[in-house]
Amino acid sequence: ELKVEQNPLFLSMQEGKNYTIYCNYSTTSDRLYWYRQDPGKSLESLFVLLSNGAVKQEGRLMASLDTKARLSTLHITAAVHDLSATYFCAVVPPRGNEKLTFGTGTRLTIIP
Amino acid sequence: GAGVSQSPSNKVTEKGKDVELRCDPISGHTALYWYRQSLGQGLEFLIYFQGNSAPDKSGLPSDRFSAERTGGSVSTLTIQRTQQEDSAVYLCASSLIHAGASGQGVNEKLFFGSGTQLSVL
Image 1 (cartoon, rainbow over the protein chains, first blue to last red):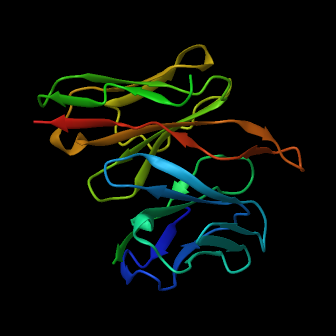
Image 2: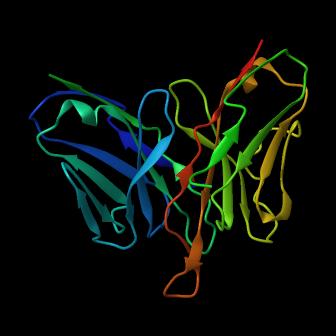
């Protein structure tokens, strides 16, 4: 059974600081997704990482994928308050099953 | 439509009653998913429809849960004899599966609806 773990589960950081959220998964996969969820809202797609070594950046967020280590990172640079949200990674198992398994989520709070 | 539409947005029901939750996916999207999110928790997979293939029902928690997708479009999730532990936000998502380099289907990304908040009293 595919398991997806994120750490930390909760993260408070000051504006202007850098930090990284980690997503580990238990079985082979070559595709990983990052989503953002604001309180009381639905999920919004951030990144789709489709191969080993893939790196994508949008504003202050950068995501990368290491399929050999079964690890993805979401790096936040010079955090600002509007990045406060819960961030989820999701993984697709190999061989044609498109069922996404989501991680536990990381609740990020940016403190002014 | 412009996005994934779910109805109702909120549903309060009494224990033991049946409920139906509706999802209208983005037009042309071949894949449709149902997930459940309990308060402060992650997303729990329920069921996945892809085109005309048999749905992946492996996440349905009990035989009280069932889902249909009619005509490859609208989907209904039905919960019979609701229990308090069924209280959660039920999220629907749709996506377009396209052929990858190896010919295998590849999911670009899921578009989520705003969910149905189900409260069982």
